[in-house]
Length: 354
Ligand SMILES: NC(=O)c1ccc[n+]([C@@H]2O[C@H](COP(=O)([O-])OP(=O)(O)OC[C@H]3O[C@@H](n4cnc5c(N)ncnc54)[C@H](O)[C@@H]3O)[C@@H](O)[C@H]2O)c1
Image (cartoon, rainbow, N blue to C red):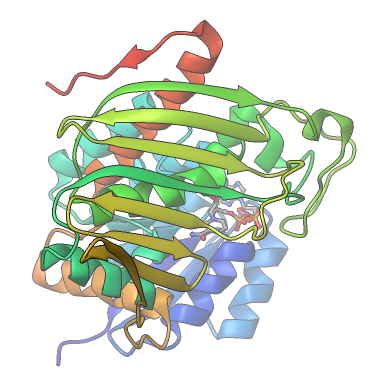
């Protein structure tokens, strides 16, 4: 086997630490360099994970000629500048979601990927969960027929992350739950149904909890001196170029009586349907004019993030296109931008793809 690839990580926060723990389980790659805007955090993680080099700045890490690839795990506003600079420096990139804070920045990343010829993969780990893999296999073998309607979302009742930190500031995050958790559901749904192109979007966003410092969750560290100018609920209908429709509903906080706060996807096809709610999956079809439901057995997966990371390394080593490429990140960002625009104008937003 060839030498493990050498990876640097920018961002030693919560998800940065998840990547450190994940890559430690791989023998095809080593994280050998780290940096963070708050250097003591990078130093602490370096000690915890035996990382030999702490760079003082992201630029110094990106210019490190010994690195093959970088993981970008920083607040959303820095995704585009760091990913683009990494590609210019000849590094492959594993980029946290969402791709950027808006579709213009996401397009700039996509163009940089094309110019560099390097691999850029979006870190959408839900694609590698055992249930997602089982559902994808069922769809690919035709169990659902043509899928013409999707209802997806994630309705948290009380889950605003890091109130007042970058999470709740539009200039740093790009938005609220749409950008934060909606992007996961959009990404997984479009991937499962074969990536049809979105052609029009109609949506509304609301901020009823965040501005009053209500609906606070456990992720992230609140900064009560900060502010909140993003949505806490969004609802949208997306029309697809294959004639299908996708409804997306997300919230960080809501007076919702739904039994579960878990992510969901309901796929409705001509031959059958599938409901994913959290880690449970159900297949439904009609037989002899009766509704028949069957539980779906997830594929056995030890760790979805290990599968994601292994796939990234495999693409780097063999020059393959990842299954979560830049184009999917850009497509997601086009839809999210269009939902915000539709909410502002009250009109449907048409999307063209030339
Ligand atoms: N895939 C997932 O499930 C998942 C889950 C959580 C977060 N995320 C994404 O990961 C990213 C980071 O989220 P988090 O929860 O780890 O945030 P965090 O606030 O815990 O960590 C961010 C870290 O980045 C550092 N930082 C900020 N600006 C920087 C810069 N310009 N250069 C270098 N370091 C900088 C901060 O000091 C902090 O340590 C976000 O894009 C978020 O959307 C993804």
